[in-house]
Amino acid sequence: MTQYDVAVIAGDGIGPEVTREAMKVLDAASEVFGFQLRRTEYPFGTDHYLEHDEIFPDDAFEEIKGMNAIFLGAIGDPRVPVGLIEYGVIAKLRFELDLYVNLRPIKCYDERLCPIKGKGPDDIDMIIVRENTEGAYTGMYGFAHKGQALEVATQTMVYTRAGVERAVRYAFELAKARTRKQVTLIDKANAVRAQDIWTRVFAEVAAEYPDVSTDHAYVDAACMWMIKNPEWFDVAVTPNLFGDIITDLGAVLQGGMGIAASGNIHPGRVSLFEPIHGSAPKHAGKNVASPVAAIMAGSMMLDYLGEKAASNAIESSVVDLIRSGRIEGVGTGVHETTAVGDLVAAEVKNAAARV
Ligand code: IPM
Ligand code: MG
Image (cartoon, rainbow, N blue to C red; front, top):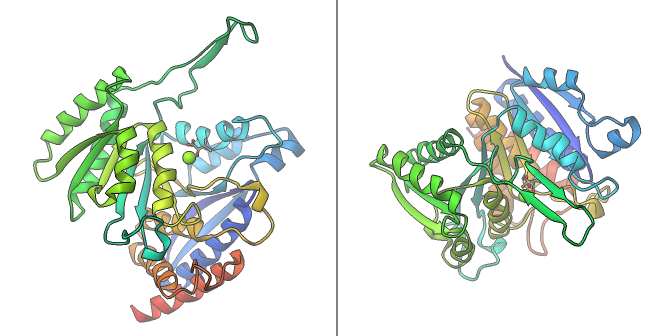
């Protein structure tokens, strides 16, 4: 039986409860599809920091490097300084494991989940390739004359040719395998002139993919087009910060933060899967958070590990349950975190029986 080593960091806020449901579904999938996930749980997050004054110890990090994948629930808590745990956990994993693609599918599973009148599953099926190791996130910032009237604050956006090229190439490879075969570059090169490197590298890589069509949108216009004409987008590639912003917008197109999943990927290496949503402290511990995004992150993780049938079974189970109004229904269906997990797990077992 194939075995995979998976590190699980449930994290803060609603992280542990949505992770529990995702694991329930992964257990169901591994049982019926015949593979094993050897999970190691790590307690890192705000509670651990407050109790032990430690964010992410080196020995645990070394251990995780040798695993096949990482599952993360959510990170962030108002009891500690802004960014402390985010940089200590998520950013550390993204940067030090060189997870250069943040893959964020935006797929609407049911018209009732889409807030845009007249748009539904046929219109909303795009995937954002967010560059994940550069841009505004490299932590190159500083302050001079702090607190004084003439205070200066700077933060550098960093783009390397190698960094831009590998993200763009990933997007083209992805598009090549899809029906539409289109890549849109989303940037702000008209104002952020350093992003000219994106314009040039995109054109160079595009020349190698004659079967893939290309498009371009400035990020402000992209925010408008994603709402007005979401069907125009297939694969889109974009710098780190814009990718962060437009994927929250995208999450709404597919039904909200409770649905949207993501993968932080370095092809061929240990990669990290997580829901796009945050830790939502105000909803924590109430059994009200939707675990669908975490469950779909689990599905993405299985796809990455090569367990395609199990990954598809999870996705189709979620889709069936949504379309039949049994979960995520507007006014219908179950909403409790644990009940949704139970239903998806049961449906995955049924789906496997049908294969
Ligand atoms: C995300 C999050 C993170 C980001 C935060 C928690 C640092 O918003 O994964 O989209 O900005 O990348
Ligand atoms: Mg974000």
